[in-house]
Length: 202
Image 1 (cartoon, rainbow, N blue to C red):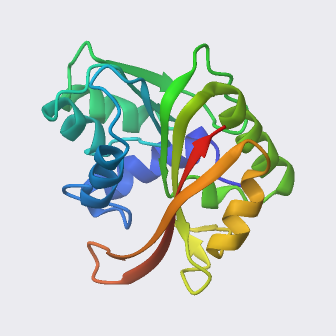
Image 2 (cartoon, one colour):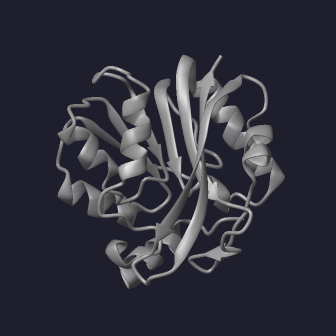
């Protein structure tokens, strides 16, 4: 079970986004995977658990104009909004376990949020939400700690997965396009192995 909003607000206040283990100055792999989808600049893209990530700012620089960031931490969203006061971004303060989107998306991006869902029921709800709110022909991009990755992150347990386990968790309605491995170097110098899966909503 991931921490609640109070927990994550405290994390952002005490360690700061740039010192967090997940920090990336430029999310190169995320940007490349989105570019490879060849969606239009008006494609609706949601960054699930995006917090204060640089992804949305980079996507704006690349010309995308319909972006949403969802995060459980209001502090993270405020930090991001202060850096990106842009009308092309909708900021949604919500817990992904119970979030009910009011629209559909063409691209659903999640780097390192899903693996905090250690409860099977939460995982099932996550994929049901994605299934209902990514339109046919759209895509999901999800990255999780690999099977040899950390057993916890930010003081919380995580669900490590093989590519096969992640694909199985998606359930019906998704066709895998590709998978990739990444070795993320944290600000503290640790190396974290990730699996990425790109799947098409069918």
